[in-house]
Structure formats: structure tokens, C-alpha cells
Image (tube, rainbow, N blue to C red; front, side):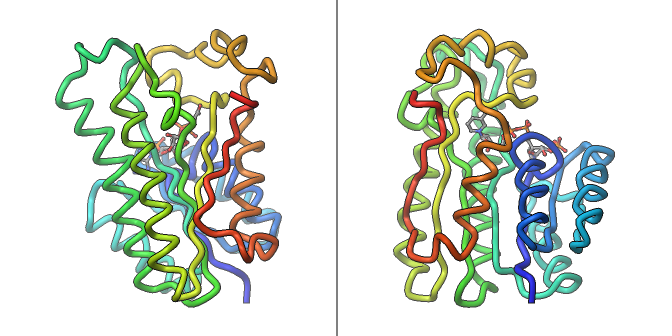
Amino acid sequence: MAPVTVVTGGSRGIGAATVAQLATAGHDVALCYRRDEAAAHAVLRQLEATGRRGLAIRADTTDPDDVDRLFDTTGDQLGPITGLVNNAGVTSPIGPFIDLTDDDLRQVVDVNLIGYIRCAQRAARRMPPGSAIVNVSSAAATLGAPDEYIHYAAVKAATDALTVGLAKELGPRGIRVNAVSPGLINTDIHASSGMPDRPRRLAPQVPLGRPGEPDEVAAAIVWLLGPGASYTSGAIIRIAGGR
Ligand code: NAP
């Protein structure tokens, strides 16, 4: 039977690239999104063109009922869930820490931390041995993101702790848990934070001299979910061009 993997935030950016590469690697995939139905269905069509089965489900990871529906529907329609990519994430408008609003803080914590924990829990409850979870963290966890979004960096550091703890607790059940820590990647997330040209602007700070592409992160995620990573658990793989 083909592996069945849930990718949160699969309609754009790193999530969409991951869905495409998972399909090529032989996974059936359920992707969720929050708003952009057209983008999600375009990713689904691309997945189905490979001959794999897929679902595009509108589910906000901050809503417990939506998350239950995401996992129930996937299990019912695609079969036992063997993979989760916790990817759906948001930043806040770039700015000084002292100007951070409570609403922006709450949103970053709700989506990037509570949403990840909720999805990991729903996955872990039903995953058979041999399954794997990949959390998409950020190099911000160690860089701190000063003058941009320190609260986001703090939440991504929590993602790393979540990964280490889950790897230890779920390992005895045969479930591997890892994270990837992307640096500056060319996606729409930078426009959402009010600086669409952030990748180009910050490229000189990257030892490799350029931003990364979503496919370069997706490749590591797909490897972590696959048989080649059968003894890899609790790892946090930095994909940040040397930064
Ligand atoms: P992106 O292009 O903005 O895409 C975000 C995706 O998440 C979209 O599919 C969006 O769906 C979905 N999403 C957001 N909030 C959601 C929610 N509450 N429930 C369900 N889906 C939700 O972002 P990206 O750059 O690919 O980022 C993906 C992950 O990588 C995030 O965790 C981010 O923190 C991390 N990361 C990114 C970078 C970077 O430079 N790009 C660097 C380090 C880490 P809708 O469009 O429907 O809202």
C-alpha cells in the first residue's frame, strides 16, 4: 500500500513543493489550506497527474474541529495515515518587538505552535508503526529574528523542542519525528509580512549568496519521510545556505 501523508498548508510555497515531490515519490497526499481554494486545487491536479490519489481539504489548523475533519476524512478516503508534514505557518508584519500587537502574537502562536501540536497529536493517535512526522521549523529559531519577528523565532525554537520530545515519546511506537529548519526561501510568506523582496534584500547575508527555493526544502522533507531515513529521528536539518 502507498504511504498516505497529510501536508498542512499545502496550497503554496514549501507545502506545495512538498506535495508535488511526495506524489513523485509514490505517496498519496491530503493537503490542507485555509483560504486559497484555487491554489490548493491547482496543486491537487498536479498531484493527480502523477497517478497518485489526493485530497485538498479546507481546514484551519487553529480550529480543533477542522483538524479532526482533516484527519478523519483523510483516513476514511485514503487509508491509514503514515506521514504528517506540519508546515502551515504564518509570520507577522516585520517590525520592532516593542510594536508587536497582541493579535499578531496570538496568531503566530496559534498557527505555528498550537496548530503543530494539535496536528501531531491527531496524527500520533492513529499512526501505525513505520510512520513519520516532519515539522517545518525555521533557522530563525537560532538566529532570533531581531527587528523582524522575535516572537516567530521563539515559536520556531519551540517547534524544535517539540520535535525532540516527540521523537523520544513516539520512537518506542515506531514513529520517527524530525524537523527541517529553512532559512530564507522564495515564497509568498515574505509578502504577507510586508516585505515581498526580503529574500533578495537579505541574500548577501547568506553564505551561498542566494535565497533557497521551496523544492530545496521539499527534497529534505521527502527524504525524512522515506525509507532512506529509517534510523533518523529527533534530527533538525538546517536548510539555510550556510546561514
Ligand atoms: P506560504 O507560502 O505563505 O504558505 C503558507 C501555507 O500555509 C499556505 O498554503 C496557507 O494556506 C497555509 N496556512 C497558513 N495558515 C494556515 C492555517 N491556520 N491553517 C491551514 N493552512 C494555513 O509559506 P511558506 O514560506 O511556504 O512557509 C511554510 C512553512 O515554512 C511555515 O511554517 C514557515 O514558518 C516555514 N518557513 C518559511 C521560510 C521562508 O523563508 N519562506 C523560512 C523558514 C521557515 P492559504 O494560502 O490558504 O492561507
